[in-house]
Each structure stands twice: as C-alpha cells, then as structure tokens.
Length: 121
Image 1 (tube, rainbow, N blue to C red):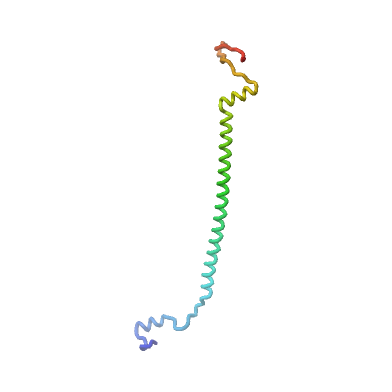
Image 2: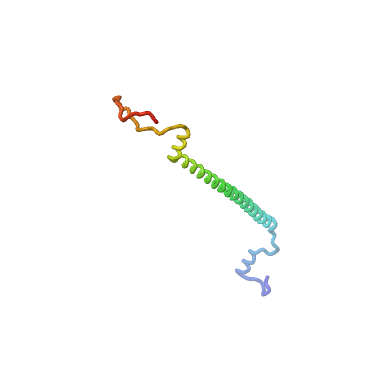
C-alpha cells in the first residue's frame, strides 16, 4: 500500500512482482567472487610486467653483446684486409726467402713450350 491509497489494476499487478521484504539474496559470495577476480587480475598483471621487464633486460644485454661482436668482427676484417694487400704479401714473401718469378712458360698439349723458361734470380 502507498500513502495515497491502495493500488488498483495494473499497478497492483506490477507491485506484486516486486519483492516485498528485505532482500534474501546473499551478497557475500558475489562480493567475494568480484574481489577474487580483481585480485587475480592484479597478480596476473604484476607477473606479466615482471616477465616483460626481464625480457627487456635480456634484450638490452644481447644488443650490447651483438655490438661488441660486430666491432670485433670489423677489427678482424680490417686485419685480414691489411694482410691481404699486395705490398704486404710481397713483404712477407721476401721475409720467407721467396723471390719474384720471371716470365711464365707454358706447356702446350702437343708438348711444345710457349715462352722462355728461366730460373728465378
């Protein structure tokens, strides 16, 4: 009943559908479920953030190592290039006692010699 008087007709039928007393549904399990979901979500985010941080530290370490190895590779390549230069090869050959060869002579398939064979000086 309302202050204005008893409900009639359609209003009375609708009022009968509404609960008439204190709510009997327990809210504690729902609240507990929501708190568990929120807590689980926060813990999941914390673990994800920690994992990403570890990955970024490892990535930074690998980038530094890659840079160091690239620098070492370039230094070794410069050393190989310096030792492969014609003047460096000639100098090392002379240090080993080698002498420059004269004009080459070729042996033809028929057994004739093309060019003038001569001993190295």
